[in-house]
Amino acid sequence: MNLLPFIIWWFSLPLIYKLSLSRQGDKILSIYIYILISGRLPLPFISSGELWIVYGLIFIPLALAKFVKTNPAISNAYITPVIFLLSSIFYSSLAKKSYNDGYILLALEQVSLIVYLLLTNNVDKSVIKKTIVNSLLTSVICISCIGLLVQLLIILGLDSCPSYQIYHPLSDIHCVPFLGSAIYRFSIGSNINEYSLYIGICILVLLKNINSNQSPSHKNTMQKIYLIILFIAGLLSLSRALFISLALGLLIWLVKHIVVIPLASLNLQKDALRNFLIIFLLSIGSILLFSYILPVNIFQDSDIMNISERFSFLSSTENLFKGESSEDRLYSLSGVGTMIESFSILPLLSLGEGTFLHNTFLQFQLELGFLNVIPAALAVLLSFKNNVYLSTMLIVYMGVHHILYNPILIISWYLISIKNISPNRSIPTFS
Image (cartoon, rainbow, N blue to C red; front, side, top):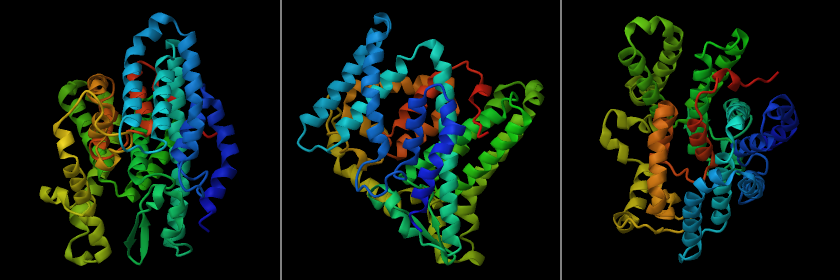
């Protein structure tokens, strides 16, 4: 039975490509995103590596070709930061004592992806945005449906949660005992933290599309169904970062539209206010459910208590640093305390060595050097001007997880950088 996701993925690939992916402007990028979101689903039997890493190598020659063809005045503007990145990558990998095999190739792939996206001319940017948005939504919704099917099989007792560990990097599957069954922490094919980020990004994109008031009613209805699917998947992920970033982003939205925008114009925003308020209350309600309601005496079940402990820091902030996960991260930080104190222009750790820190900012500085931190920090700050909600979510995840080598981080920041494109052009369709 644990081969079912693998079989479904390959049998559904032609159909998904025909109905959605093939309609995008940039088919190479579209397929890349789908394979990336799928993680280990296409090749669960390979002990290390994933299909998207191999497929993504195509961006190295594509980026070189774009660089050669692009107007020198434009390409030269990007040559300096690219040289900085490449210099850090090679120094970090080749000049350090320890080196994680494969990370230099993965880093080169990501730099090539950056160049490929940056050198896209202004005419194609709307096509690229449509490709990214549609591919993200299509991929995450389809993979989430596979995961929900797996969860249903587990609840019905037709299969066991641990049997799906082949779909997880390093067999890192999270099965949480719950009322005689198990909650399969939602991350089918991927790392649990990374997949919850995919869900969060798609929820924000759907909210924007639904509230754009430019979508036909039948498409709005479908998008609301997608939103429900993603929220169920997010609930099953038990991800603190997901619910906190959603609640924080939606709180910013409420403040902006109630305090900043004159109340006289609020009537024009009533539909958007209602939809955002529903998701905000669901996010807060989910946090309260895990933190306060489930632990009360009438629900004194050891399984439920284990779940509620993940969110107990909301009632007592000192609990944020308790538990196996938090304590492991604190221990990892103490192990590189000296390096953190001695920030350097040059990398202090080889590529991949900072992954255990669960902090993308530290990982970036220690593995790529302070030389690259300043332009990256400026890019992050400027992103808030374009999309404060998605920027907030990415900042939360970067602060508590290691996602430096996940291309979705690059793709998301690029998506944020593109402005003034009608959101109606970014609506996914399966028919």
